[in-house]
Image (cartoon, rainbow, N blue to C red; front, side, top):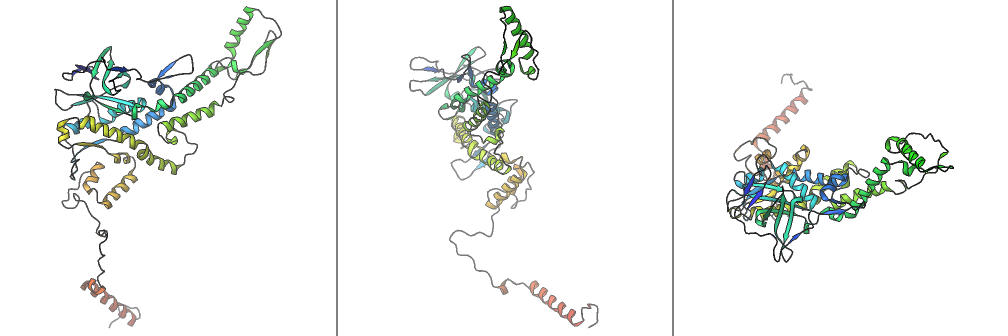
Length: 447
């Protein structure tokens, strides 16, 4: 079967027997998800919501950029005590360069954008021949994907509609990342999205047609239909819209500017409602409010603490899920990589690159904990290794530590620790002090 990939190239993925939904199978029509709005019976897709609502866009963009800057690294020896970084080979190249003219950061941005927007992300594995390990990875935008479910509601395959054509993919063709149960944060924000969209629409309409809520024009006369139409057009041109907010009224034909009518944004508490909406968005996406620009209760100290918590408590569990999915569906799914004991892992230390002080603290703690060598720490900072055999390529162990429960070594007596140099130095000082006392401090006086 053919699979469409970016760049306009049709690729063969080998012989496939996966059918479209037949007896016992059905399509899941709930994806891509949509939200019914509170105006005119309109419906918005998750893609449109992210593009149109600033707080949702900010949350998705923050999580996407933060996640994409953390690189994956390949290791072997998962089932043994000998852990080694893998720099060469098909898997290492695939992690660094998913496909031609792409690197991990730009590729990951496309992947995470779907992951945080739809709660799902899909990438297809390209093989040059059947049975060979994947040579390239391509992200398929989730809005073009439809799930194929079996009679037990388990995923049996994927239907991709792209460019007017339809392709079928089996689970072995792809890596499917998803939130638990595939529920995206926007699913929990349906009511919030509806209220926020209505508030934005109301504010925009109030500015565009501002004459309606401002006041009513009255007259004691009895104008006919043509007079009413002419006055309506004339007053609309003069006093409607945001650009007419500061104009004054010149009334004629008995018209009077009556008391204001309508409900203002203050009466509707739209400002407070929109503040609540942005906090609900931050909560659903598990982002600390200061990182969305909500700075009412932000200080320098708590932002520093929240930044660390962001990577540990917020992004950490989500990236663990991505890492486990990649290991199961990309690495372990290939016999040659599984038998080699390869495994992939996030390098969370990469987030310290813009923080030299944090890098220095991390290097000091690693040295004191005897976890890395001097050359390994230098490579992480793109510095050349020292290559001092037995020193820079060896883990250094603190000498002032003893095993738990061991008897401390007794301190040597003072006489045993003294050397001939110590005795000679002490004698010289004693002799020099006596001479200065005898001569009254004149060191040049004769004996």
